[in-house]
Image (cartoon, rainbow, N blue to C red; front, side, top):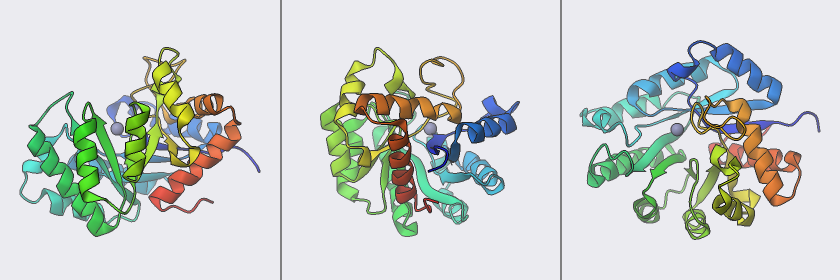
Length: 261
Ligand SMILES: [Zn+2]
């Protein structure tokens, strides 16, 4: 095998935090072997930007959707039609990030749920996987996922929770995407959870510009640092970085329907 390759399954490089040095960030990714990433939208406007960016960037694919913290977008009578149209682009590989956010709480639970369900229905119509944003909302997220039984792949973005929750997510068909906080030394609870999880259920992400891993904690995150997340999994699983890179690469390609070469 030649050089290690890493797949960052969740980043927001279209955000303004990257306006000054986006080309350099992409260059650093190539150098570090982070040769693929998914650019994630959170609103209709960001979905259009994300698709344009993916269209212009060979190693990038797009995930489009209305995140629960942007419920205002779902007030437009034709918002699902708009999203359906955006999702036709060949570089769109999933609908997301969608779900519940009971921390920011920008809309009543019932409204968040309706927005979530309408987008799951769109993903089913388009036969696309979904990428879930679930903050302080384990019970609601699981309840909806159990009911809908989405058959085209489900990704739990930036997974955080105990082993019981992880197993329940896996039981409803989720692949768990792990991010920077698993590298924090004081996050022993998550270390124990990660140790128990089969690599077949795991992917890696940065959620750039947020959630930078150790030793960059508190700084702007970038996809290059997904290597730190993979390294931490290798440490916890007592296996090689090579093995984690390959497994998570193949899992991401499988879930998002991309060729692994
Ligand atoms: Zn995100």
